[in-house]
Image (cartoon, rainbow, N blue to C red; front, side):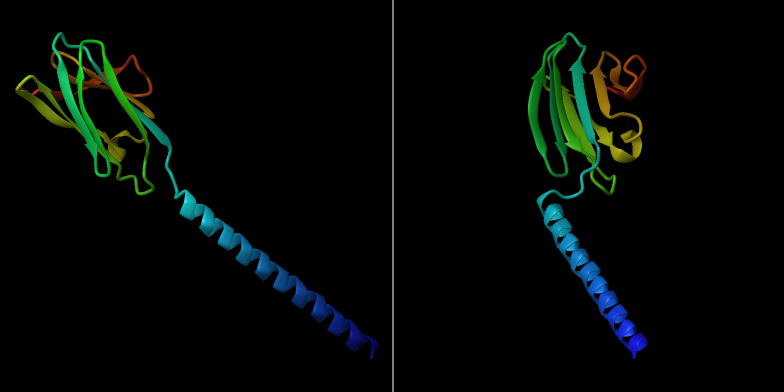
Length: 150
């Protein structure tokens, strides 16, 4: 008889323990869903800066799939920049169109996660006479990414 009551007590304690685990799991799951609804998963913060090194006014118009960053005119030495979080699918893409007065200089991909995610968290672009130079997190080492169209 003592063994039977010990088994019943053991079953009762195990049942309470398992039910407690289930209840705690449900509460945590609900809390996580509420938190994700408030702030969905965000990738690392990326900054993009464009600086004009030319003697002329450079007009730029930058966009992504979700945002139009507007039209800006940069004099020599001026810069324009923005920051964003790379999406969880690593498909983030930003592009800009450039012009000098009525002359189209080109539309270039400024940030694409497949190319730039590991290249730079602070992506710097310099508009120079020969074209558009990209700098990664090592600012002294830039590369000519795009030649101007005109």
